[in-house]
Structures are given as C-alpha cells and as structure tokens.
Length: 526
Image 1 (tube, rainbow, N blue to C red):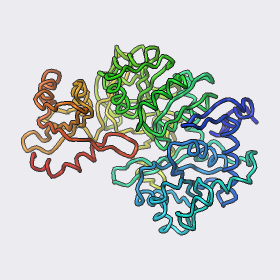
Image 2: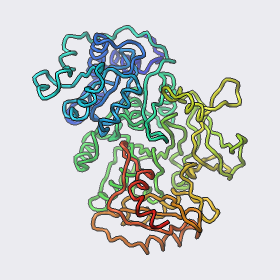
Image 3: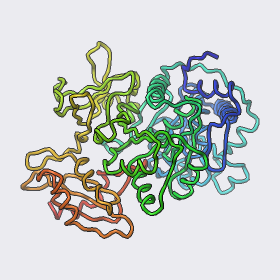
Image 4: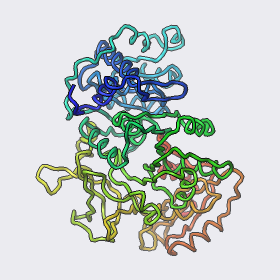
C-alpha cells in the first residue's frame, strides 16, 4: 500500500498494518485497537457489497455516538460508498426526507431507534435496514429488518478492492437550510484529507494524543475528532453525550485525555459544575472551541479547569469544515478574534460588489482552498449562490454569508450572520456582541439575541435569557450591564426570561426556533 493517503480509509488501514494493537477508540466500556476497528470495517464493507452497495452509493448511518457508528463510517468508505450520518434525535419525517433526498436505500441502525426507522421503512419499500443486534433480539422489529451482526459473521477481514479516487464523494452531511428542508453538503476524500492535514498541522496531533469528544459524529466538528485521531495514529475517547457529566469527567481523568473539543454550551455546563466542585484536567494539552463564538468571560474559567492547555478558538462551516483559528498566545490579547486562515487556505473580505474591503471595515467572508465542498447534493441553484467564481479562472470561492472585519495584523473578527444582523435606529447591531455581554452575568445559563419588528426603531433588540438552577432572574440587571458596556442602540429594548432556549439537532442554540416559539408574544411587543 502507498504511504500516501489518497482515500480517508487509507489512514486506518495503514495504522492497522503497522500497529494493530494500538488503541484507537474508547467508547463507554468498549476499547478497540486499530486492528479491531479495521477488521470490523472490512467485514462491514463486504456485507454492504453483498447487499448491493457499489461505488458511489449513499449509505445512511442512524446510530448513537457509539463504537459501531464510528467503525461503520469506515466500513461504508471501504465499500466504496458515501456515508450519510444522521442525528439520532431526527424524527421520522426528516429521516424519510434525508433518505429520499440522498437516494439512500441502505440504512445502518440500532434496535432502540425502531420507533423512528420502522414507519420510514414502511414508506420506502426499497430501503434495506441492517440493525446492530442478533436476530433473536429483532422480534419486536418489523420483518424487513435484518441483523447487521448476522450479516457480518461470515465476512472476511481483508479490505475489498478500492476503486475510488480522491475526487470521489466520501460524505453527505445534512445541515439546516433556509427553506426549512435540510441540504446535503458534498465532501470528497480530497477535501476531507486536506482539512485533516491542515488541522493536524496547527494543532500538532500525534500518535501520543488521546482526543476527547462528546460531540455527535453526524456533526462536522464531532466527525473531525474521529477522523483527526485516526489520521494522526492517535486514539479517540468518545462519549454519547454529557447527560451524566460526573461520569464524563471521571472518564476524562482516567483516560488522561490530551485534547478536549467543546462548544459554548458544553463549556457553560462545565463552568457551572466547576463553580460547585472544582474540575481539574492536568493531562489536557489543548482545548478547542468551534461551531459558535466562545464568550470572552468563559476563558478565565477554562484556564482554571485546563491549567496546562493551549486554547484554540476556531471558526468554520460545514461547507468547508474549518477556515480559521486563533493562535493560543492571542487568546487573551484578542479574545473576540477567530484568528487567521488555516494552513494552505486563504480568507478574503469582500463587499456586496465583490471588491476587497479595507482593514477595519465589515465585509462578507469568502474562503479559498482545496477543502471546499463540491456543492449541495442535487441543488445546483443553491450551490451557485455560495460557490462563486474566484479571481483564478475556473476556481470557486465559498461565500459564507457571514460578516467579518479584519484588524491591521490580519486577524479576523466575526460580526454577524448577514441574515441575523439587527438594524435598529439606522445602526447595525451584532447579536453576538450583545450576547457576550449578557453571558458575563454569572446567573445566565443561555442567551439568544434577535431583532423583532418595531414601528419606530425598524427592529428592536430582544434578548431571550435562561438562568442557572437556583438563579434569580433580574431583567433590570441585564439591561443595566448592557447599558454599561454597549452603545445605546445595542441595549435590548426587550428582555424575556424563559425556562429553556431551543436547540437544533446538533445542540446549537437556535435563533429561528426561539422566534417561532414566541411568535405570538413578540407580535404583542411589536
């Protein structure tokens, strides 16, 4: 086998040959070596081929954050297929839409999800379902469902022939769309391998690392933790969720993890626990944040919990996975920055006419590099809206739709999503800037800031706030700190204390869902 990784699965197969007994995956009580994951993935690849899967076919993986899910991703790739990882919180209608949209007729799943996939299978007679259980355990599941374990039993552990090339699609990652229907982001082996090389370069992952992740494997940030570990010859400690945080923290200690990946909601939960009972993870050498901006006020607490770790603030989109990172030495000096382009790529700030903006001015972020998606699956019109011609003939740029500014040193600062920017009193208001100020109050658990129609202001700034257990909500305190730290036009006109803020399937706070949930009340305020 060539030492060059042309396909994603090459990293796994190479490591399995060189170090078959080296740990690669710790998921709950299950510990797997590179050899064991490779054996499982190869057997699955042969089983999929035996069930009619051929090069370029889409195989949906509807599983918990488990070892089976992680290993199945490589099994699909080894079969020459394209994996479609689906969040386990997905409801039947959305699962059916994804399967139809992707043209996927093979579903890998688990028995406890039968209430979701059975009605879908009834709608899609061509769908083949392989479920991770013995046949005797599938008695309560419909007859059309077959045992994945039985299908694997007699399959060989040698890799099947690999006809794919690096330009072939490897993944369809479904993400929320502006129309309300999810869209499939197409990534090739080439785009994924490039971004892995770039990430592993600036984070410095090696075979000695033990990455930790409780992020869903269907989520780009979570998926990259698994791929980065295998690509570096390292190990991943994978958690299903943070439902039982004390168990998660103990596993982090016991496994001496060296890398921790989180999002602001996870860090908020950890900081709340830290305030009650000190958390201390001395083995961790790096902490990463992506998916949403990390509130500045969180940094000091993160430093306490991870005293020996470098903190990397990062930015990206599913359409390119990762586009910027801030060097750890600048975390305190430039706490609101996401830094510069990841190695081997370039970031451009352009105005509405496609002209470069000057330092300090706000522009639309455009990404240039080999890590861009191929496009949206079967949606050429929507693809053309975000993949636009670049200055080099034949090249495409990714128009992120996000507004940024750049300082004199070349570092970038997120301002707002172009469709989330609030226009109040003729001034532009960044929701993220207001949210960061409100997050500085210890009583605050989560916050979403949005604009609502106002006859005098154009849009009024409205803050939806949930408080920590035992906390006393104080609207005047929230308005007071905003008045102290923000320009007058940025101070929320309305502050609504709500029990809980809604989230997407990937755990992100959702501005769209909160506006829908409180539409009637907001209409009275307008």
